[in-house]
Length: 286
Ligand code: CCH
Image (cartoon, rainbow, N blue to C red; front, top):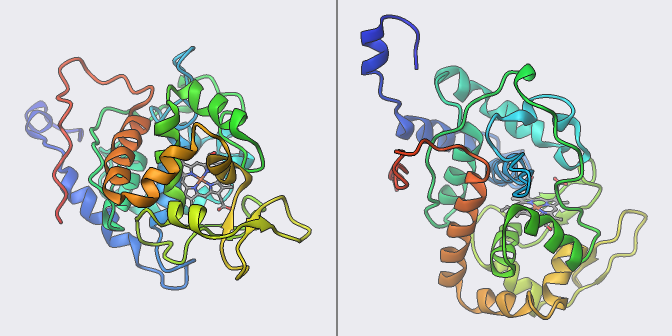
C-alpha cells in the first residue's frame, strides 16, 4: 500500500485488472523477439519462481521473488529469465504496491495466448536480501534426464503423474535458445498459441536424436521441431503415457487439468492469510 496518511492507506484498493492490462500490453511489443511474443518467457518465469518449492521443508516457491538476487538469478536453469524480469520492471514501477507480479504475469500470458483461465490470488511479499536463506541450486529439472528425475523434482513440489504431464504441456509454448539452455528450437509450429499441440506432436510426429555438437535432444523429420529427453520420457514412461494420449485427443481436458495444476504451482509455499478468499482471482478482461 502507498505511504501517506493512514486514511489514504486504508482507502487504497489494489487494482489487479489494471496490472493485468499493463502486462497484456507488453506481450506483443517487439515483433523481432523470438516468435513475436514475450508470453512464453513470462510463463517460464512464473514456473521457475514457483518450481523451487520443497514440500518437506516448506522452502522455496514464489513468495519473496528471490530470483531477483544471486545466487538464484544466476542459476544455469534461470538463464535468459532476466529478459522476462526486465520486461516487467516498468509494470512494477507503475504499480509499486504489487508483490505478486511474476506469477500474475504467467497467468495473464497463458490466458492472452488463448489458454484457460488460471486461478490466481495475491498474497506474496518481496523479500529483502537479508530476509531469506538462499536456496540450494538443483531444484529445477534438467532436460537431458529421465522419468525418475521428473518424478523426483515434481514429487518434491507435491505433484502426481497426471499433474506433471499437464504442466509440461506448457512446452506447447515458446522455444529453447542455444545461448540460454544449450538446447535449440520450438516444440510446435504455433509457439505463441496455448493449445494441446505439444501432445499431438509428441504422439503423432516421429522423433529421432538430433545429430549435432549440442546437448542430447530430439528432432522431427523437418529438423524444425524439437523435444527434450524429459519430454520423450512422457511418451516412454507407461504411467505418464496415458495422460499424454488423453491430452492429445482432448484439448478441453488438457486446459482444465493445466489450469488446476498451474494454479497450484503458482501458490506453492505462499502463506496466504487465513481469511483470503480462494476465489480472489480477478476476472480476466476477455
Ligand atoms: Fe520448460 N523448458 N521445462 N516448462 N519451458 C524450456 C522452456 C520453456 C524443462 C526444460 C526447459 C516446464 C517443465 C520443464 C516452459 C514452461 C514450462 C527450456 C528452454 C528448457 C531446457 C529454455 C531456453 O533455452 O530458453 C524441463 C526439463 C521441464 C520438466 O521436466 C513447466 C512445468 C513449464 C510451465 C508450466 C516455457 C513456456 C518455455 C519456453 C520459454 C521461452 O523463452 O520461449
